Length: 401
Ligand SMILES: *Cc1c(COP(=O)(O)O)cnc(C)c1O
Image 1: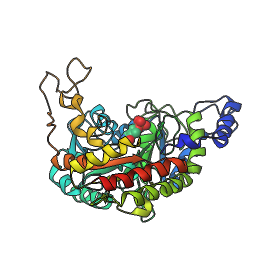
Image 2: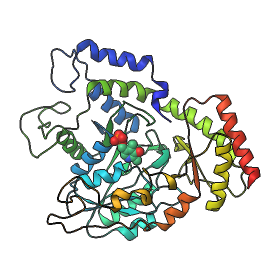
Image 3: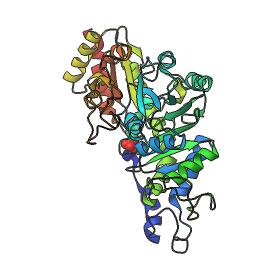
């Protein structure tokens, strides 16, 4: 799973380039930095790798979502649709920009169900955020088609699927823009960090200026530019050390994915012995990043029984219906409207009127699927011993049901 497994000399070399100049800020210091612009170089390489025009680095994947929504013009009064199986960051960013998150069901892709998306669109919907969860594709072509038909922007939360593709086209390039996270457990990591990619230069320019306090970047494209400003911004700037690490990690990404795929295939072959087992639907198996291996049982009882065997063998799998960070029914702070703001924002309008109330039972289709799904994180480095142990446990589970 995480890029920290392959952190090595390449990262250290890139970091030393920065330490040798002592310039940690991505902009300015023209003389002293001796042409070392690591964040800028990382952005260009990332955009090239994804086959798109522009990339904007920021401090985190959560910041990337916020900056992307700001550039798309999302704000208070808007609704933003995402899926009920995602990391909390996706809807935190929606709330933080002042909009109301609306949640769709997931289908057996474990990502946004396009049929449910259609039902949740209203005249307030400003943006759709499908998430490519657990390293694999949402039904993004159908989702973009729905967005286009309703004239609603699509932002792909690709935090967990850097390097993922559909028929060779990179995830994050189907919608208006795509966001990535490089936090410590993501496939490629910069410790903390994020990126937004887009083919739309005007959209990118707004992102570039917004993440730098609104500084006018137009007079000096790619640089910080002038002292003018056209709108209020914020600070989400990535620093040079992160950019340096990102360059080295990006160069390893395809190799990381290849090794994950080998390991995932081993697990998949072993799990296929389980009677009635299905695998998570992949829109394009060749474009899966294989960061996770998800398999779906026929009933939740079977699922529990299988996991009991796996646990007894010391290799229990994750059941995301029990996970408090990634699945809607477990987000009690959302249901309680818990916030530090004395006035109740973002759940309550000024004056204390509650804007929106969430029902924990609102996503029965997702609850059913998640209760039958088991997931293994797949690592880049897995010992033969560990793989054999997991495969043997899966075969044992197959006999037990
Ligand atoms: C990790 C993650 C994020 C947030 O990224 P950070 O860099 O940790 O802020 C957003 N969305 C999803 C789906 C994630 O998994």
